[in-house]
Length: 466
Ligand SMILES: Cc1cc2nc3c(=O)[nH]c(=O)nc-3n(C[C@H](O)[C@H](O)[C@H](O)COP(=O)(O)OP(=O)(O)OC[C@H]3O[C@@H](n4cnc5c(N)ncnc54)[C@H](O)[C@@H]3O)c2cc1C
Image (tube, rainbow, N blue to C red; front, side, top):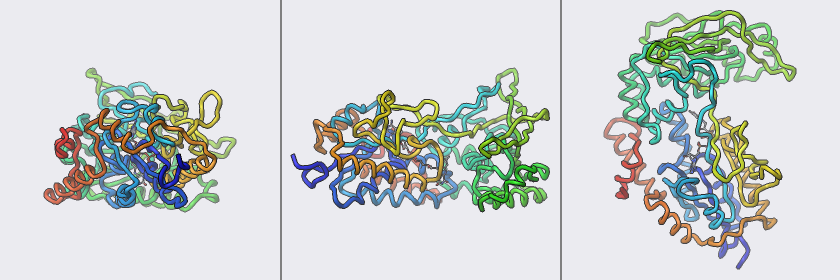
């Protein structure tokens, strides 16, 4: 057999997870002109692009145009997509080891971090992850229910995901019509009784985790006034002192926050209040187990030995009436059976993208990882590019040293037969292109950018595979 990576014996790579990290890994491998490589990309959903489709806010259509780059890669003859195929259910790590020289896990962070306060499991208290997936039409979440008959909602957290959730709750029907939000979410949000939204940050304006364009957008919503309490917009002495080393983003955030604090209400039907230096300590329920209020404690900042600013509770407490709560305190990776996992960090155990054996801490032959499941849920879409390049370069270095798996069935047809037998309703990239065209056509009819399929059965029916 000729050398792996040659024309007659191409490097066969399986990438599990069709989000940005998966595509950026494929992009770097395809750029390597000295080797021949074929990539099979798997996703548990019939649709590619991960959180670009199911996470990024529907009113941020421009950001979603990154999929054009991924689409160009996917149309290469050396690339195949096996959508609707889940690793761990439809295929196993063993199956992949039998068919590929290298395997890359890019499965993202699919669940939320828990917030341990009394009452957090009351009715109408939800992880923001569920709501985000619901309004984006993720098939696993489309039947979830959120009580939008409530007038007052709290979003715990002050990062960009919390900002997305707060903004979507405040958008008017006309604004939502310009998005690809799931059609049922468009209807339910248009009928929503929500009037008052609170976004709650543990620390102060100088430590806000949102980015300036997202913060600025909050002050520009058609149907909602965004406000900050003047006393909470003021910087405490420690934050004030830290400004000497602050980056432009922090300075801009402070400016925007202080500008919002100086504004008068303009009488828009909804109000978004951005709170600083407060932590929820308890959700209070009624006799039906529904949340009716949230107890908050006021925080003060202190500086740790490493220089970071941390919040600690004071003795000032307050209660705000809320009937619906979303906690947005971070995403978390889920383990894949047979792949070493770091429980505390919620990531696949790895060094620079090489999967490490939990006992020996040595690289596991032929197995790699990239994206959120490699480094945790941080950064924007573009952050996954250098991260994936680092992984792909480890793969190329290992290939050069002959460190690859030795699959018993490396032929492309052998994989096609395996998937056909395990998951006859798998979705190819051509199939996705058809679904994409149907969604765009439905969008034209509805006067929207796209109307999404939100049930796997409907997608399969449209493809004649049901
Ligand atoms: C709510 C939200 C809003 C965001 N907004 C922005 C934004 O506006 N701008 C920006 O730049 N970034 C944004 N981001 C960040 C960006 O989405 C992430 O950086 C990026 O998607 C992470 O890429 P990934 O490939 O690691 O994971 P993902 O995008 O999550 O992709 C992982 C893929 O793996 C698949 N998968 C999981 N398990 C399996 C399995 N067992 N078998 C097969 N497939 C599997 C999943 O279905 C998914 O398609 C946002 C993130 C969130 C959560």
